[in-house]
Length: 487
Image 1 (spheres, rainbow, N blue to C red):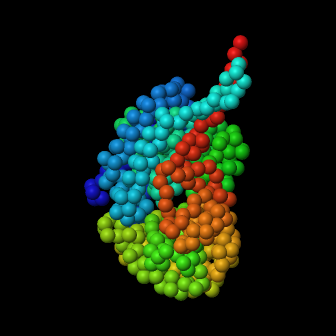
Image 2: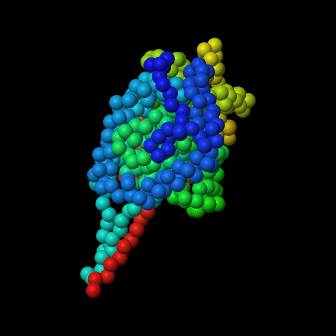
Image 3: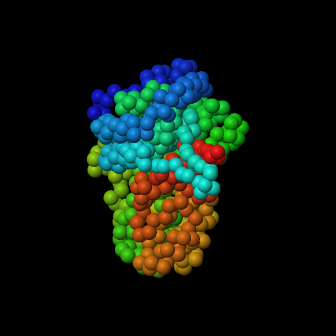
């Protein structure tokens, strides 16, 4: 399939593919082997202006907004079915585009994308308005209305899933959507657009503009006719988008940003071997290019040496390999800049005095691909950059602690607050620590749990708002109070 796959690189606006207004393109280069996959439209302000105008017109006309909820539901469920039917193609696009193992793309990303759209669609006609407790001669109605034009800027690490978490509730609530995928992995977003049209989403309701953050991304963020901006990506870019919203029309801005998540293992964890296996997965899955990666491993000192040994053993199943090999668990890093960043941080860790106990090397360079070994540092403290800064790669920092209070202090000593985990057999310790952790998601005796029924987002500089669950609907609707006095 990889040898014969037809890859589309054009933008998708008003139900058809088209090149950028300026005619410019950029190459999509596969991190698997360095070959060019396609030339991709490099959209800028002119494309943003055109797409926003079209999205606004179709919103005001009511083609999608005024469609009965049950009918919008049927269309979105059909969209989810088409994603599943084209699962092999979509998984292959993501693997070739950003390097994740095909086994993960097919069994994790595709099903999760379809599930996000289907679950959200099923909720459309099950979310009710409210009536205020009023005097007998008055009626206070509380309703939600779609915002209008939603711009969604999504990252490169989970191109389909992150897009689905945004576009599903935005579309479900009746908005028009413009999706700006990362320039590092735009191919599945471009393909999803055509599937959305095939499913029955009206032309102009769902548009995709590939391009760079400083061009088309900035144009959307500053646009006076974009009502809502949603973003997943780095904290620095998230902060800039808030500035752009303030400089323009005070558009609603919902951000999911970085993380440096603590994974806390007490000596009385139910199963240290299982905890080590999940800790290995928490840093090596998706090559560590995960916002919730368990990159800070806090281990009680009495079992620290033993646990580091278990981690090293567990990482033997996370060796870099060719992403199209179904047996591969650790694929390629998305691009050369990200690989350089990871290698730089490995050097920083060594220079800061941390002990490199596993990995740390680029491998398979002869293939033309971008691969790095999962890496473990022991003897780390929170003052080190490898413990405080988000690396976004398979680099694990092991930090010791002696008491629950110390573990909590270390865990919360971060600008981030996206996720955390606690491993212990003591129910009191589990709940006391979980309550004390300043994080949007906390997992007990496992790592990275939850599904579409649970909200996802962070505290502090990990962002605001929530993806998934019914709470996501709040991001894409305006709350209206309508008050009637009976004569």
